[in-house]
Length: 133
Picture 1 (tube, rainbow, N blue to C red):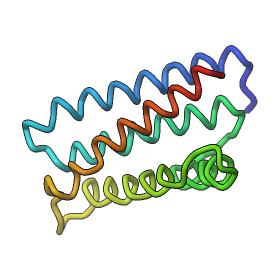
Picture 2: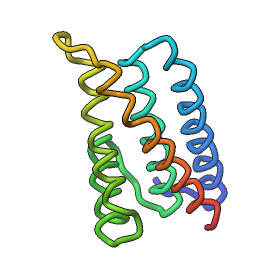
Picture 3: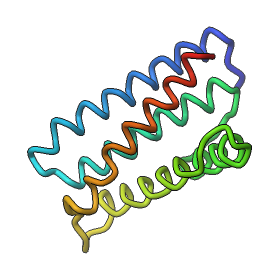
């Protein structure tokens, strides 16, 4: 399904709003030490901002793996986005999978907290790119 320019703008704006909402939730959850939930929100903050980037550029994906693959292919390999953000995105994906689905492992502060600032940076960086057009 192809989106009109107006539809793309609306969806991109909504995804950016959701990414920033995830960042705010992270800050609320840190004092509560909800590490699995924070890992989930970190991933989804990155996911929403990366999908906004893909959507704005007319790149359609169907799966989370597809998002990761197309982000790398169209933006990291081309040098538009620093490779550190692809590594971060992959790590957040894995960490979220562990926190959400692994019954034998609980994420800890030391697993999760180092990713808060880099994820905020990723959201800010891509948001800035998207606002420039």
